[in-house]
Length: 342
Image (cartoon, rainbow, N blue to C red; front, side, top):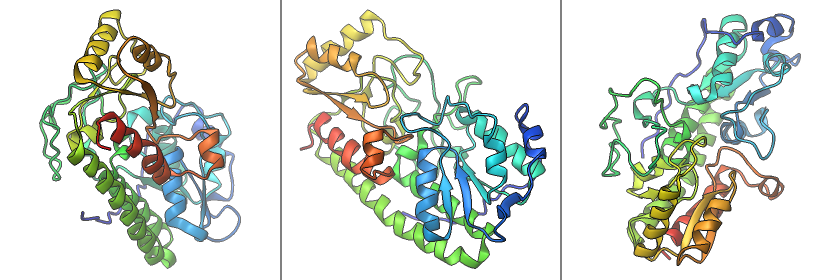
């Protein structure tokens, strides 16, 4: 895997959120936070916050404004966040409409506070983002083969339907995660040149951990006894499907707003029985009721949680789980069981 370090500091005009510019205008201190050095920042949600802290190590501390138990997309900040971020040195986010509040805040910071480093983790990855079709049938993607072209040239790249948007869950793919980590390290290094080499070294070390996650998922794909598993909830894992050739059947699809019909649930139960599936997956941040109902009405024996790794629970937070632990302790074992790769 090749990890490039791109210049991702974005300074310039942006579209400000309503009311955000006014709250920033009353702030003083800027990026120095009153310390005269680079030592603090915010990241838009759990995953980039975890990565920013790993890369910065003891040189800076990042905060996650999203409460434990919540995910960053669909979240709304309170009126104080803009002022809090403007008093730090950096803001790390993903430039995706699913995080519109973060896009708005980034635009305001770029326009009014050029002392705050605004770092987009998705810089350079725009061509790799998959369509997020909010219809049901989440296992159906533009790339039905599941093959992913490392260059980013895949079907549908230039043909996204307006209104469909892009799937923001790119971070679940450990290969893309390494690219995002490199972007964050490059942005921190440009904002804090004295420590640029340290940030780059930390990113390289973290990339080795991500390589191990990549290898673990590839092993699941290689050893899988079946080519389909059932996810009883909205599908946040199509980047894993594209990377490793997994096929996840969801009666819900990719949108958390979708509700499955009785026909879709019945079809899922039939699939569970015809494929001899014993483990039904569900998203830990959603209700397990649908998964439990499928288990009760089929030959499956257990509902097992997975995580989109976009937030954390109280239990995982207390255990010190970061992104790596969520992937290695929760997702890899669950995928092994669901695809019969044990």
